[in-house]
Length: 334
Ligand code: 0CH
Ligand code: SF4
Image (cartoon, rainbow, N blue to C red; front, side, top):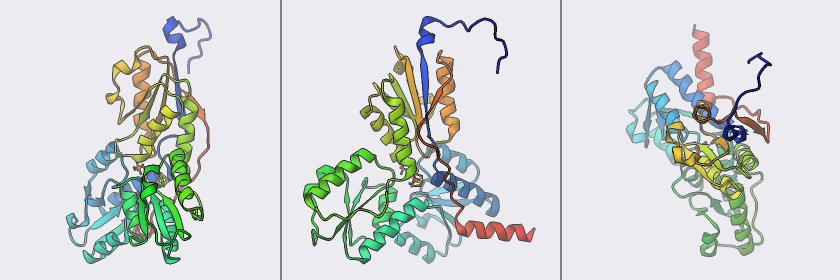
């Protein structure tokens, strides 16, 4: 920090009016941190290669970094040699995938976020009570495939209020809903309201399925969106929670909002006439990428970012038990 208290900084009138607002919290959630550290520790412990089914989290930089360290990402378990070690991603897998792993005698490390596992348990419980379960989420998303796989004969997907009219259930008095953990809170409430209008006895999940991190990042983006000229969300295109942040930003009043994987994707023209730029990042995004965006803005005359705090987060998850057990055994053997 400068100790020179003499001359005030000389700023052009343009620069003096510029501002950068930075959402807090943003970036890594507890489940992502755990999943990424799981792959890192597995590489250290077992050595490369370590196989990972699907992207460990939906961020292309995270995946590229782990690939450089010896992780091999595959789409399906048939690509993993028999007997090898495979990590399941943070988004979770269906029981069928566990069965395939057993069949191929794979050593598995399950990095499914415990908050996704919680939704799997809710699905199993509702199915055991013979409810029809309406799972709100995005078709084709890995988390939805994993959750639906817990009770395929009881679960049907609902993507939006537009789907509600076409829902067919066995008994309208025995219907429950669940959701993907990374949806828009506001949109999901709309979908639930539409479902409840059709099925007034609709049963809610025992606790929020949209997780604390998704909720906090949407709350934080609302805080920095109102009145800003441009809101940049750092995150990958297949990251549901990151994409939702752009939508939430626009709904909350940002004049423009774009998602970028990193600073290199920012279009210089987005900054034309822009005074206040707000910045945030999805739950799967390393902080270094956000700092890259701030450096890009600084090079173009924007001042240091002002953090806008809307929630504190302190949740930490312990590593998957299979990995902890092997780490302990390795430490004992030394
Ligand atoms: O937001 P989605 O679910 O696409 O996934 P992500 O970007 O990898 O973020 C972490 C969430 C993991 C599962 O909830
Ligand atoms: Fe877990 Fe939520 Fe992070 Fe998904 S976004 S990994 S559910 S904490």
